[in-house]
Length: 331
Length: 305
Image 1 (cartoon, rainbow over the protein chains, first blue to last red):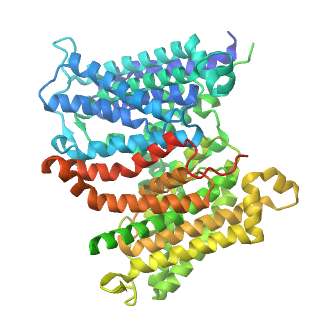
Image 2: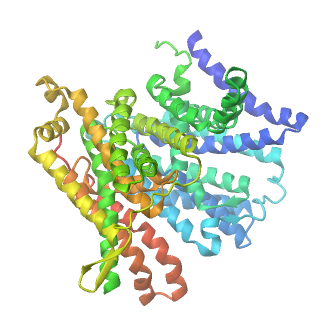
Image 3: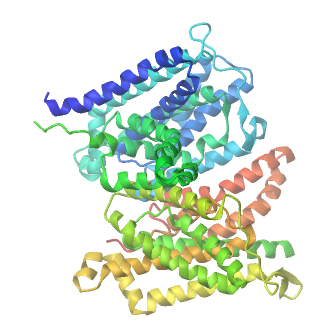
């Protein structure tokens, strides 16, 4: 290993260490807001990581990935509403149902390519969104409050903030590890090969459709699990969980952080959501001494800064944040 | 029967409005190969500009015309300053970059015009109902939308198929390097096409504003519909966009009106009233999925490069 490569690893290690140590700080300072914010970040980072498996490594740009957040969440919410609180039942069922949805969507969508694929995944996500809107028994448009978080028979107490945070973090790190193992396996090589030249992969004898479909289903199941966490975190489900702008957010996180790396989407999720929280403050604080009240007004409209910032990332930092870090030499 | 005719006309009107958006989108997509999510923002800006100019000049028509002029400038300006740099990039870059533009424009509108919605009042000669067929009254304004959109569709067809500019546009869509090599100023052509797309989007927004008022985020939902249209129609095909947009407009409007009744025939009333609205909202996405499964490149795939 050379010194350049270590710069990236140090950054990632620092981020992981920060996430691991965060409850220590929030516990001492009593800053529950920070813990809540980072629980949300970790959950969405997991969803973005699962998206990156198909988008970054498989070349399948899904514009409907938030649908699985919704499916996972709705399985938990509906079961809880019907009186089933056991996590041992809720969680595996949510993962299986997300995988089944991904299987059906994948079989139909993977026939198309490029922009057509982006749009057909969007279409399926919209259909599922409207199913959520029409579930009158489960709150329809307004959503459904979940009375109790999933129960694990004394094994884990999810109502404890710190326990829940560490569970989410563990699952995020597990997901990233799984993606890393996957893409470095023979399976992952086929997936990446199919991204760069599908026809060539097929002519040397790989049934790429099956590989891509399997990859799509795995990503859907992972995102379903993130949905389970999100529903438990909010104690609330609503169709808004799977609105198409949420799918857009997931893409933004993955691209912002850097799609070429398994850690990229997590970095992007942290960056985007922290920026959302701090940008209004930063504009106000930094701008006030310079331009006075105008800065305070501008702080209210912070998205006017975020928008061009995203554009700048696209134009000038193509590998995302991860790509900006010094790159290791190829040996 | 009367209601059915009215619903069909409404569907046609919605479809033609969608066509105005989809035409610009498919032109930009087909020629510059640019996925422009910010097209919905142009639609929104058109509505806001027209409402402001109409209030200033005290005339609906003058306001609309000034709004269209402003939209051309905005579109061309956007192309020159920003979007030009995205040509030749990955589609994912387009999605992300123009997603950023949506945020930017929404906040810009909030800053300039405030968070509330802006109404564009109709003049009295449009704000009444006329008899389009003996015994069939219909809103004069909605009818005028149909007429204007059909005229614009015809003009667009003539522009693209019968003029020199249109010839260059078509040539640019099939082989841009060759057009450039033949000495055509391709950059200027792209700027013009983008300006044209912005004017069409703005026109759709202006015509929608009196019905639904101009409000922030109005562009996002209809943008998705416009994408559905160009995907069903086949990217880059204006003819496909016209057919698909009327198809989508009719299916959506007529479906919303009659699907719940239809379901009631073979479902319990409670189940029908639950499934009806959901199914009619889903209808166009189901259509799109079916089209894509059967014809992965849309109904009228543009000539392959």
